[in-house]
Length: 113
Length: 109
Image 1 (tube, rainbow over the protein chains, first blue to last red):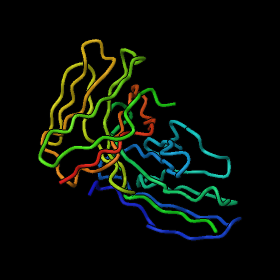
Image 2 (cartoon, rainbow over the protein chains, first blue to last red):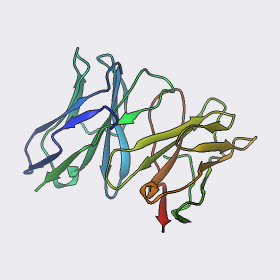
Image 3 (spheres, rainbow over the protein chains, first blue to last red):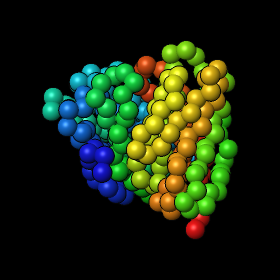
Image 4 (cartoon, rainbow over the protein chains, first blue to last red):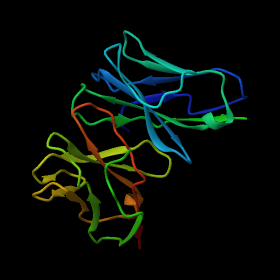
């Protein structure tokens, strides 16, 4: 158990819909990262927040957005969903911004039908 | 793009040491070598990291060559539960982890 929690575990929704994925980092960790893992793209970095502020962006679509709240939990919002958005979405947290290791949550499996 | 090259798959007998190689010939001086693994579809698990010196923790040892162009992750006594995809990642002081295809390690009894 990494100490990072993600909800929900599974999510099934239809194309065009909007969903919100939630992540609670390990106690004391200030950085939160979101990754997407699909069969054809592998594990890809989406976005990073540090203490409430966006710090780095990866291959995140404009239809996707994220935020980190004052209590440090984070939410990833996915809108206008397409079949290709079906994937595992992982959240990771780390103590700070530097070389600290990242601890991953169990993931949310999103299926778009 | 990932900056590392790993064999697609390896087999190891249970109880033996598993030696997973990684080539990172373009690594720069401020980049660390990280190893993660992913068991089935679980979240990736941090194993170990290093800059120049060899490192050891309760899970594994990391051997980095003197020119830092390659490294080896050693699981000293592999068990069936070590069957996973192992990712070697080079990473700047900037947080983003760039995952490649990794090595599928199969530990067999």
